[in-house]
Length: 375
Image 1: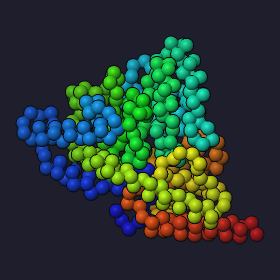
Image 2 (image 1 turned 60 degrees about the vertical axis):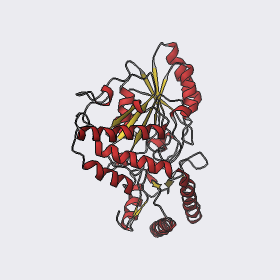
Image 3 (image 1 turned 60 degrees about the horizontal axis):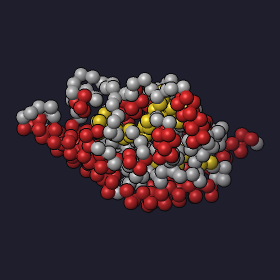
Image 4 (image 1 turned 180 degrees about the horizontal axis):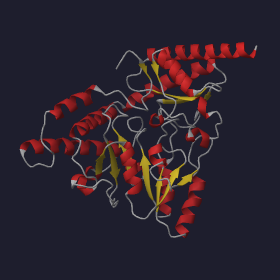
């Protein structure tokens, strides 16, 4: 990490020391985990141990944890791995879900960004009457706004009509409980780099009875569900980060206090400020701030020059100035003026003070410039 104040944890958390150490140790093992000699068995042991740890974290079965290259691949495997299904996704899903099945039918959300259960039930009823097999995919927490979805209620509805349910829990992992049993879901996608693990490693947890068509072939790895030699180093880092995330879950209350202070102080400086999803259950670390009339990209660049890192939306859309489909679906008109501030375990009071000071100065400069032009 540099001296920059880093407030973009929803894009990626800094690699934690525990993960770094586990990865360095794994690098010393040369064996392929499919080899039967001692070095291969040592590599296999790392994978098996990680599978158990990650299964415990999501309330799943270690035999049904499929390691992937990240959340995007996990989502794509879930969406495309079931044969002959009609897919329903919420209208505010991550791009890896929205683009993972472009033929999916979209479930609308209300003005708070929460999925419309009545609309979903109507969709399920129509599909059931038409004899369609359905997979419903609804994220646990939105990556832009942090709004938490009623996934268990979605799953209960889906079960009434014989549908299966996938949940993208990438942003939720480590920030709120993720339990497949309580969520009543059939598949859960997670990723390491959101919780202080390395980039390029994720997993899809599946429930008993879920049979997937592999999307990557070429070997018997992952019980023939995903071909290719396993990323042993990444998996070792993922496990270490998962253990750390579980141990620090109680600290989310402190992070929520920091986020709430940030929002309160900004609102006192800028009454025109809008906070997407405020008043709705949200992740404790996420704030989507809309400053009308000031482009999000401009805000991001101004803050970056002042030593503060935030995002103008989903990091997967970096370099592309485009309207936020999430905010649009919530009925927010000034979608181009939004930025996302996301906190993590390393965030301090001083970081929040710096952000408030820099953001307030930026907003003040913009207001004065606008007043001069108006005059």
